Image (cartoon, rainbow, N blue to C red; front, side):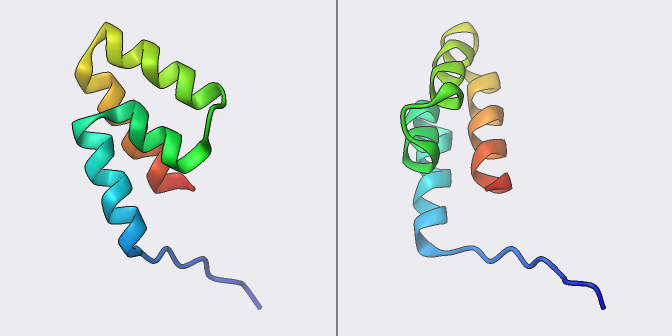
Length: 63
């Protein structure tokens, strides 16, 4: 018997993704707090806005 993993989108995920597009570090902060991914996202956002967005959406989607 295999266990299927279902990803359900909640209302909070919608707002996290909205923040991930507008202010990527805020979206990551809401998902993981002040950890490595948050600081990495700040650096990516400073280096280029699009890499920050991609990283934030990836973090939110995979957790």
